[in-house]
Image (tube, rainbow, N blue to C red):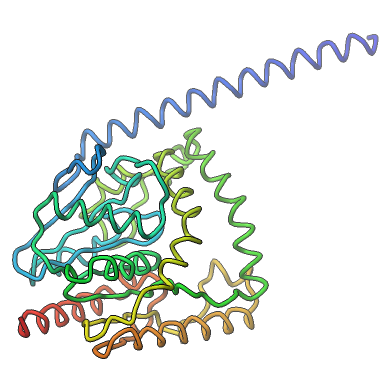
Length: 339
């Protein structure tokens, strides 16, 4: 066979394979979209949707009493992360979780996704919902940073502040292997986003995964999983993080505002999924620096108190929900008694 004929057939085969991949990708994307719609129809959002600046925002409130507890999730997360906390706190007082713009059942909103804009939208949402003020604001990770900014912008609307392993507005530089891991994570994010969009993640069962202890939220978790647009919202918040850190650095101290700091256990061993990617020395250095950042939060108020959740990692409300529920309930009761 002549070489020209070989290349001719190779191009034809390559073209067919390319067309086949496009068809499979389109089919996978269509399947993922249909599955998302089906899950959302089967498990509609709990709570209510409110119009904030022409866009729907989702708020889920349970229980009765005041002060109302408002839960602010971490970076890229929706209301379901509070599934081990909200049911118990609702026995003590009215407790509300919500979806920031672009996540869960909340529409994406134009403009920057920094702490100022996030705080303003939460403030407008609580006003639309008629939530009694002042509230106890609980923020995890980046949500703790947003909560600090909210407490600064709307000081009279906040009765107390709870920071759950909150992001520092002036974070220490990360050791070399952790910094390299962050850079590698950018590539992994792109890969995961593509796998979700093409339906590969759904075929692998990732879209139906439910963390242990959140079985009562299983339907809502699945209804919010594998939605490509939420990756865009994550990227928008990521781009706004530098501004959010600068805004957070201008917050505090808060005078005599009650502040509760719940921190991960600095003695907890390195997580298994990091053990082969981060050096032991770098891990110890980062944990030590993070612990110092957490201790510095005590200076935010003359009435600040810190609690270390033994055996917990960064997700204290997953690892030790008993401590979060106990401490926040006591915190609310002390504020209620004073009022």
